[in-house]
Length: 157
Image (cartoon, rainbow, N blue to C red):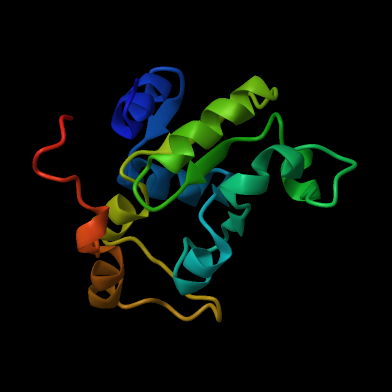
């Protein structure tokens, strides 16, 4: 049995990752598609300017034509540089791996996710395109685990 972290580590070996500051630099000089695979409510709270929201749950059908979830901008981008982002850089690793399997040639996962993007003080906007204050973003990215979500002390692993 593998843990979530072990799966992330395994998939990370199969995909390219890009650091937030390197992405910010490349975005200034290169036409890239930024695909945010978080849920719509997460995307509405804050996201990278110019990114598109394609939730992880519909990614595969969004990447292909002839589905209700098809996102033409994504379906036609198999040769375009694409960076997949999420909150922490975990979901994006899985998404980048799937996209590579589907024939996308230039896919990266944003290492450290939007948390790292925010930590490097890069711009984030909300659903109305208003810049998000860095302190508010810090609060948003702070883990808020409920007691029942924590591993019991007597459980292995």
